[in-house]
Image 1: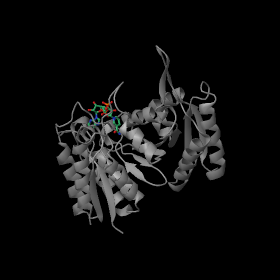
Image 2: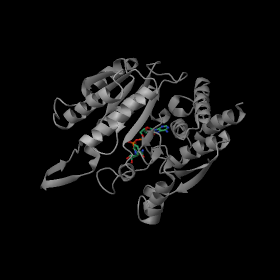
Image 3: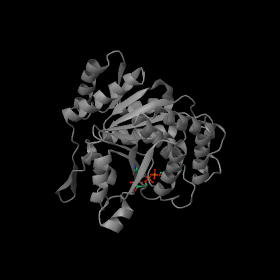
Image 4: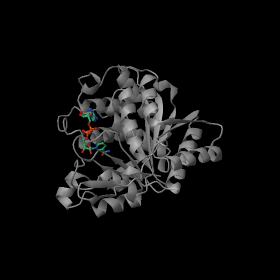
Length: 336
Ligand code: NAI
């Protein structure tokens, strides 16, 4: 059954990296049609809204999207497009597989971690107010339903992928109620969904130290929204940086796939951004649709170009975004 994929190019390096992913998909022969949609700072200028209603309607209809990063103003301005999309479509699970790629020089060679992050609540509820002048409150909203849902997802994910351990990062020593609830739900979902998988609990500060000391001891990581945002970037740093890590935002009624990096204004328009995170996100999208063969071919091609040292500047190479994407696309087109 042919699918329509909503395509949000996004801001900054978004159009460059999504164009590379698009070229790869076109080379794969998968029967998918692109539906380009506007969102982000550029959409706000053209349509007066960072997510025009036509974009929301199309995602509601087709339920699947590949998205480039979008710029969010710091300390002022509009609500994050990502937060809005994740809340609107209830994309409660952010899934970010972080793995070592042979050929990239990093401190570690054997990282194989999947970060699973609650994506709709916690500190990113977006509810802030000034209580009295000079005193701001930001609400961290934690619900039993939300915690159970993400924990159930994480254990089901671990079981279906043959993973051995889920480590929960938390701060329940300080946020006894909120993170205590998160931890309690993780324990119960562990028993209910996958008791054969090991459950480990670490206070997040110790967890971060353990991650940089020996990431190979970790398998699946489960955490709430804010912690997951930080820790997934930290994990990206273990395997070569933000340019190589793909991501998925999964809900029961839709899914949006995007690399973990942002719009990188410092390199936007220069044609030097690494497209592998976006291309890897396309592979996750295809796997989600059941197109396993195409997804595996893309992952294998990413490994091949990196092993051959055919990479962009962030990884020490000289390739442009387009050339890197074309190498992957050509490899896919030539694959038997
Ligand atoms: P960033 O991820 O855009 O950039 C951080 C650093 O990593 C920069 O030096 C950048 O050049 C580099 N980098 C990022 N992606 C790269 C790639 N593909 N290839 C090579 N180098 C790459 O994070 P930053 O600067 O904190 O945020 C910039 C904007 O992006 C902000 O407006 C932020 O809100 C937004 N953002 C959007 C996200 C999304 O839409 N999913 C995620 C993260 C940030």
